[in-house]
Image (cartoon, rainbow over all chains, first blue to last red; front, side, top):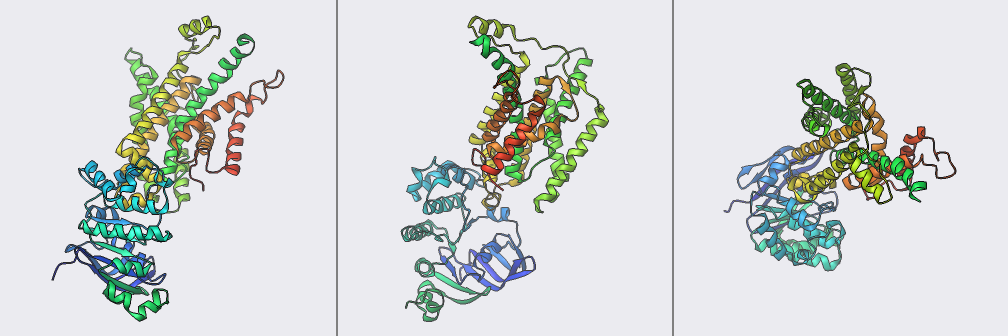
Length: 238
Length: 315
């Protein structure tokens, strides 16, 4: 059995006194896209933040490539190779695209220029906007900047928190195809999504989260075709 | 035309306004950076400026004791080092413990620091005025004869030329730092979004220290330029500068260093020009109301355009 890149094992976590995750177990294998779907308030984003050491973990563990990183501060987690793209507020709006990428490379010891060039290859739209302020870009392009910025380090895994929230269908498709491209560069991805159907479409596996615990697990296809899940989260229409 | 109108306006209103504007600008840079990056209004900033001026005076006095004389701009360098240490020390022991708490606590801490620093300066140097480089500042003879030949005589003492030159150099250096260097870009990034900077892996503590260093240099320069201009050291000078400096920072837009420079110049000019006899022979506004001008601009900005001219953060 392969060792997972990232695993969350029986997590209980929350903010202050409030426990949001009651018993959550998730793992991501190398070269996998894994989606976490579920209704609002199920704790999807909280699960991601628990990986980054941004909230209180009561029980359970977070393991990165065999190393226990439970309760490690965010900056150390990022140095260890976990890249995170928050749902909102995920680019520096007053900095240019190029400067955003440079900031993404803060923990990268060298080869920044070369990596930036690679990112412009992966996200060709950004190359021509490199000197524009990120805040002047459209929502979809901002999301591209945010992902490119997160990939500036040699990420062992990329965490995406609702990358298509609030985007037009055109951009949604573009984001999902970019996610595929990123996976093909060898970076596994854990993605939290509201657009469950599309997310499961690109995912190798998925987890359905309800009330802070995983309710269903399966391959992207299995979950997308499961009538019960379809009724609950995929907008009925089956 | 020049003799009737220009000479008086330029030499007695415009130039002093720009000089004052430069001093406000340098002070406001520190305030706006602190506000942008650490997210609190640092009430002790004026006192830090004032202590920078006192330290510069002391360095000059020590050197004078050895029989040499040192220009304030040179004496300013070791003083700036001490001011930076003072900034870093206050941050470490008085502000950092409140970093994750409500903003009001650290604002109160800075208010306390303001009182502590002023009292300490009064204990060390005494509460009375001290003459800083005594004597009458003579106008620069070359500038006077050169502009006089052109028919627009400008009477400007060397100290004002130094203040202008110093401000221009500092603002250019600041622009280079913020736009061309890694730490400067990170300062802008943290000012943009501390949370995102945190999850990007940016070393926020390092950025905060850089902010105090930049703020310390600008504050020392502002304090020294002020005492070069007034030629008097007073323990209340920092406090008097606080309101116009905040007005400048708000006018330019909180978190916008260039906005602060622009705002400083506008406030400085507005204060001086408000006393110009625009209508009739009497000053438009009695010079005693100068500070009121800054206050009025601040209040109007907060009501009409709280994000400032350069679209800073609004609260």
